[in-house]
Image (cartoon, rainbow, N blue to C red; front, side, top):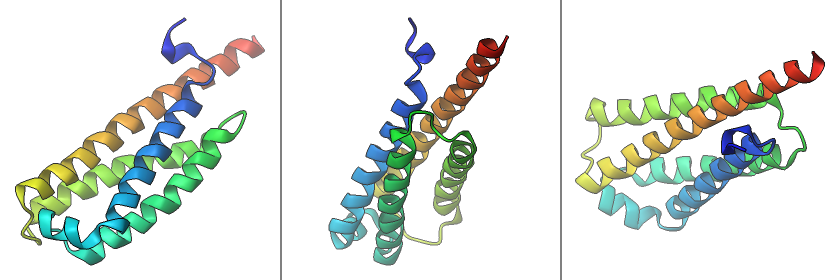
Length: 137
């Protein structure tokens, strides 16, 4: 059986999303000033997005823990993940902040991570939709 065909695939992707957001959010909240100095990103932005990521991680974990992940909410998560990636790139392209090389890496790593997660979530939604149709046939 393919990992993509597993009935737990979508839940597992949501757990990965929750874990990555919890880790990133915790780092940004716990080490705001250190990260601000290393990345060139403002402390208020790191703290604000860190708190948001911690709250989002709790919601993603809730979705992952459901026997059947809520498809509509996961659809919103996919859109949100792509929007986060666009916002990351826009932040870097804007030149508003004097972001260091480490800051560029930090922001691009987040963009890449959320794009991969969104693609996996989309794959999971398509697989569960196809599975539901096949079960009804």
